Image (cartoon, rainbow, N blue to C red; front, side, top):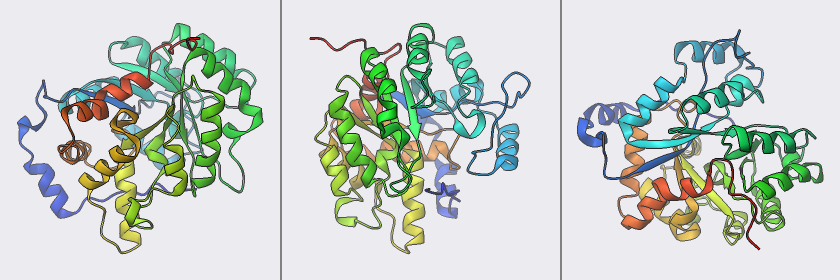
Length: 331
């Protein structure tokens, strides 16, 4: 399993963050933004039972993290307001609640103009299809997220046992967010098959399926499996702050220079198309200077056309994550 490393900003990065002008993120920035990846959580265990058994930090540290800086709507929306995000999706945070989506659904119900839910449910659970249909109607569900697995142990969400859950998403026009871990190439090849089998599902790959530029600098980390998946037009890709921090950590471990973010973003656009890329902050998860990382991403996209920037930061995400689903495919 991939280890999510804590990124410690260098003195230079810290100074850069401190020096950002206040008007960098005004109340009405020129670039409209939709955040496809943020997390909501709070430490209210009596109302929302806390489950940190699967937390990457360990349960004790995860609880301390949440107590110290809960990701309530007030906290998340304050960040969004600072960087110019109009709305976005709340992604169920497995590290705090597992598959109990109660807090996320309550937040999104209370703030329908700003946040819509991406839930986690068991892909092979026989109850999942009915739950997806119910929540699509009652909770403006946009997507279900499935993560983990390995080439050795398999991927439950890419097995025959998950077909009913996939079929439900296909019927409802819900998106499916996937985050395979480790060597992702075997999963990417299987995902291509599922993309063909369920054409009314928009599949969103978290963190672009973790390209490793330090290993494949000539393709900015994209493997042949990434390139093959690009041909499937119902597959989309998230570019997140966590991905950037992982690439930085990978370069540091390999004792190689970090790939420059601007040519990286431009390469992703050339391969996948801006209409298949969407930005996400991963706010509430990655331990970086979030405002600085948003500014870095905006700087990296500065060379794109206005149309492509709009797609990357707003339009693609809005088209993938549709409240209640897109409905059945037209004949």
